[in-house]
Length: 400
Image (cartoon, rainbow, N blue to C red):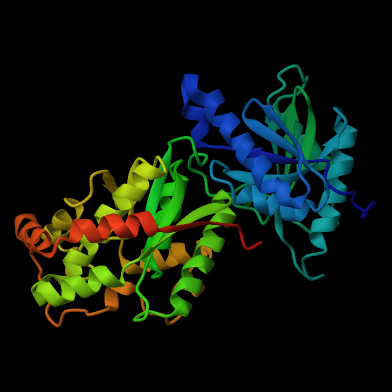
């Protein structure tokens, strides 16, 4: 039996939700292709071809890294390394035996993994039905001494034949992608990134719905040190693996916090910090043509996130505010953070600026009119204009 297997001829990429876009489908597919070119560029690029229901990718070397990069591209449902074979039963059986022999090397000798053959027949001119062809391939691949057990439901190993007008493709493995919509198909958003667990997951969730996400962070020297700044950048490097190079706007926030500490009721400090962040972020969003702010706020998780406080904070923004995690519990967010790759960075012990001058007993039901009166007395608008003009923007690249 042949066990030497050449490099895959192509990566087969499947998409899910894009197929439901009707007359806009081509536009979504074209954006996905552009994003895939961007993901492959650091690896040497490759040839990408749109087919009906599939995208075929021929990377320039490093195919394993290329497959991983494609699987981290929003809009991708799954990716498979695939081998071309001839349009006849004998060739399909021979390829199946080779692929199966290589796959079995991953199992101990005494193992009896379960197995099935699946055929997708987009080429209706082929003389056999999908079911008949799957049976014929399985009978040709297996004999009485085969170390696999046939099982039709949830097998350990699945040999796939994708029979299409442009060729016949054989594969075993599927690397799942994130699904969703390609980044940039729905515009731009600006995420208020705190350094905790929640806001990076909120940013990732917005990317999944087609937004290109840039970031704003608030830094308060000398109360918060350089470790906090580096943590923010490390989080964005991880998130950039999912959407490509990403912009960070850094805002110096200490003067605003000192002004609030010196002149506002203590119980309102956190609410006033967050309202000021909303106004500053709204200015930066308009400057970068972002149509929404994105936050990691979660209903009831902390004192500032009561229904009344969220309404009071959101009222300070003059662009729409998206809260992707509003109903999530903490365990759900942590699971996502681990999947995305941000969790280990988020749990590094570094304070964020909202811990500066934290009130002993924060207000649970702040009112917007009450906050507006305090803000007018403190002349926060003038200070905010200054910090917006001084905001520093940098471009951060993926960490891989």
